[in-house]
Length: 230
Image (cartoon, rainbow, N blue to C red; front, side, top):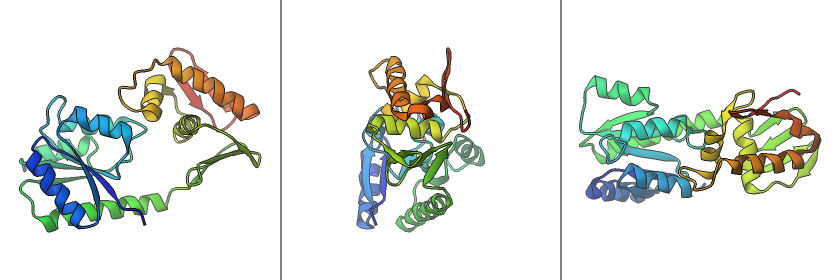
């Protein structure tokens, strides 16, 4: 089984290194970021299995960072544990309202940290077990595990970005997605390209899907929607 990957976001280097050492001693791969800007850059490269997030951070702060992560289709499923020196009910409620999965008050012990992390991982793994690995849209079969798409049983040769774009639409089937959301889902935060990149890839994707391309609806002035029926 692959090691779990955790991104630690804290502006105190000593805390980052301490938590990183604890996790790696217990078989968890850990990377660090000392600001939300740096964390966004890390998310563009690799999606972790969990984020340990300090509340008080430079730039936009931990709570706003968590909110943006949870609203983005690319990162919304990543569990977040908030780390803070405050221990008030209000702070905890705010953290949970913006999408945090758990809340840990500094200072914390090694055993408590590991116990919280393992508990959240168990919940996430159980939820994943209930999810289908194949998304069906009419005659399309999108296999998330195999990274394959079939149309009426025939394999379709999609590029990685075309596949990610189709998956983003399929996971939100029958829902309108703005171009900005699709750009963030497929290319990550702060991608330097224009929103026209989405239109070009949608055009190529429709062509490769053949008749099934009609399931992708253009929403003028908004973006796109993948319907499960034509």
